[in-house]
Length: 104
Image 1 (cartoon, rainbow, N blue to C red):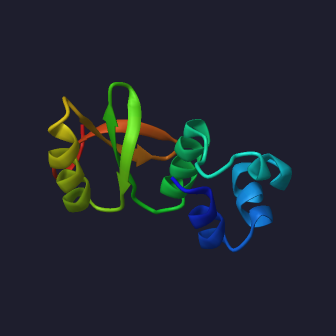
Image 2 (tube, one colour):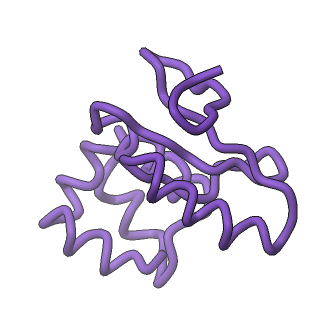
């Protein structure tokens, strides 16, 4: 994920830093690409800001997020070409394995 694109989306380094609970100086040290850990943290935080959130987990790592089952199933097909995936749904503060039409 390009650092400048994300900064632009949030409006400033300070706003992005507040979202990630880090300093703007830390963002200045990233270079062209966001560190992978910060990408995952940002995606998790963004996903939690939706009322109903879904994510794809592959090889133990979250790789895609969506707000609807239909959308996440599309991502599952795409990411599934690279190996097995799990669809999870955010329930309260934890992720649980989801199935079409609801949560297991």
